[in-house]
Image (tube, rainbow, N blue to C red):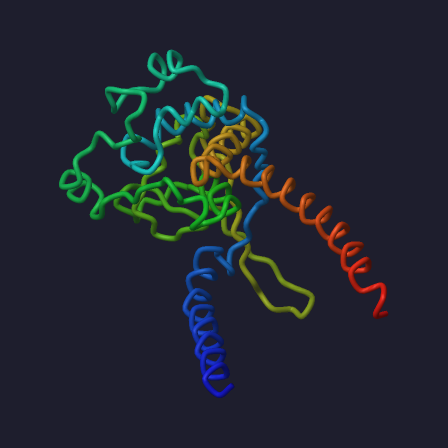
Length: 254
């Protein structure tokens, strides 16, 4: 009995320690002090996933890798291997290859100061809302080496690679007096130079991109969720059968 209690105490302390270690990372990833817009994620929308895959390959895959994602998994979102080969296969030779970046790591570190991270599971690490807000939060900042800054990730080293689509935003600082007579500043992004897309079109494009990144982070999640429903239904049916079986076994005692 004492040995059992010691095991329980060790497990309890281990779980508590793991939770405490994970808490700062969760708060940092979620951006607790930054307002995050809700990402319209819909993994059942295959057209959105296909548009997002196109954006990812054409823009993100120039600097970032997705080494844990294979091109042939895109067949799960309705693309044929021929479509993948003709339209998306730029940095690999075979459809079964992983999404590797074409840029060498030493070059990336020399140009950006740090090697751009792999994006395969970025949606799970940062959350879809963080990515959706981040990719819409770039603005011009002449004090930064790249000329860009971000509302969600201040002093980010990544330039705004989608500026031709969104245009150029600037940060407007407005002063106002609250109900207590205290002066405060309000920061607001304003579109200074329009891009090739309207703001609504750009938001939809980013929604598609984030949708794809959520899918890429776990391509099997839709199958997992469907399987989970069947498992719960089976367990529910098994509970009913087990309940009446128990009653039958114990009817002479109770």
